[in-house]
Image (cartoon, rainbow, N blue to C red):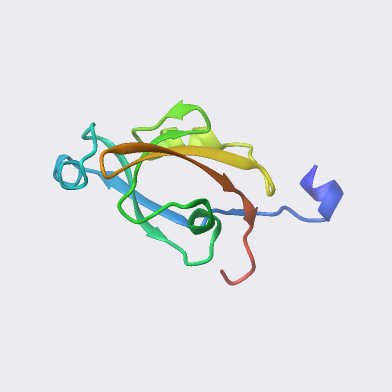
Length: 110
C-alpha cells in the first residue's frame, strides 16, 4: 500500500530510544517491576517529546500489550504506519501515565 500510494516505503520515526530495565534502574526510578524497558533518550521536538515522554520513564504498555522486552515492543508496533497513533503507558515518579504518540515519517539523514 505504501509503495502504491507514495511510490516508496515511508519509515516511521518515534524520536524515542529505550534500553533494558535492570533491577537497579527500576529501584532508582521507582518502577513496580524489575524487567522491561526504560526511556534512555527522547529527541527534542520529536513525536515522543510531543507526546510527553521523558528520559527515565519506564515503558509498561504499548498498543495494548504489556511490554517487558524489546521483542515485545517490536511486536506491539509491527505493521503501524506513518500517521498512526500509538498508545503508550509509562511509569514516572511512581505513577502510571497514559500517553498517545503519533508516528511520523523519518526524514532522510535523521
